[in-house]
Amino acid sequence: MAHDRSPLAQPFPALPAIAGATPRIARAGYKDWGRCDLTFVELAEGTAVAGVFTRNVCCSSEVELGRQNVAQGRARALVVNAGNSNAFTGYRGREAVEAIMDQVAGNLGCAREEIFVSSTGVIGVPLPKDKARAGIEAALLAEVCSWEEAANTIGTTDTFAKGATATAMVGGVKVTLSAIIKGSGMIAPDMATMLGYVFTDAAVDPAFLQACLSDANQRTFSCITVDSDTSTSDTVLAFATGAAGNAPLVSADSPGADAFAAALHDVCRQLAHLVVRDGEGAQKFIAVTVSGAVSDESARRVGLAIANSPLVKTAIAGEDANWGRVVMAVGKAGEPADRDRLSIGFGGTWAAREGQPLPYYDETPVAAHLKGQEISIEVDLGLGEGRATVWTCDLTHGYIAINADYRS
Image 1 (spheres, rainbow, N blue to C red):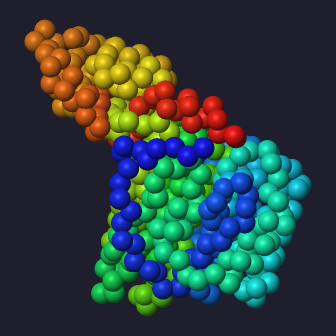
Image 2: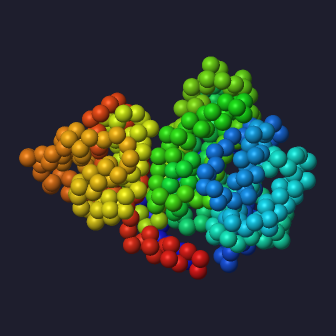
């Protein structure tokens, strides 16, 4: 069932081609839909790879093999299947992934450990090996596609294609990053909670690329939530082809390393926000900023407790400035907090300060703020210097409608 485009949708940006990364799409027919559902990206020899994966213990074979293969640091191809997550499918699911890896490796003349596979969709149905094989054969013969076409192809319940780009100067050489992502539901930060792929022409040592991606992930993808559910398939991969010709980045001390890390963080932040903007049934984009915590990590956990609260999320959906629900969420977070130092605000207007409602509090500007699409919640714990921002969306009837008919 198709769903209306999210009211928070953003237009797809003009993503530059990345030398050494060649995307193609095909129709494998994993579901009965009239669209392409297999994405194939061929990567130049020597391409570095880094990845972060779900910590869900019921993860797919794609995640298990990807986690193993990323350790060797090189990639020649990416295959993404949409419509079937191939999770909780036992040996048949693993055989399907290994067959894909062998097929692509045979065509490219590389080790199968350099082939990365992701699948997304319904859990518990083995990926059909015949459809996967035919889809890859078609993709190998297909014309090069745009990043927007690739972004549309990896989607499932997504209502709009998501992409981001950034550039950086590395040792006097301009390097470019282009990235796509899918995600709309089953979104909660236990690494990342979607399928995301970053491609860059920068030359980066795999170990340093991994360090940059892990750091960016902690401050972006691991700070978003739609519904507190962590997928069995979550994967974010970064591929660096080296085609830009810069002196390879090998550590934080390399010339231009800071600029590259900042560009990667920027791209990941853009992608993370887009996933929240396409949260299933979402009508409002919510930023929860927590300050005054005992540490940044503690602030993040308090922010997530607020962002994951159904009571907070439904209050925002109903445009109700019920700050008592925020108090509740702070108190249940399991982090250091003091009721008598707690301050809460909406849209820059404080409703309560240091444990008490303000006697002069006027709800009028808050009510006006909550009628918009961009909502901010501010919490000051009054305990220390830790701070963090977490992003989420409201919880509406649309979320129930989408998930009640997901398999139909």
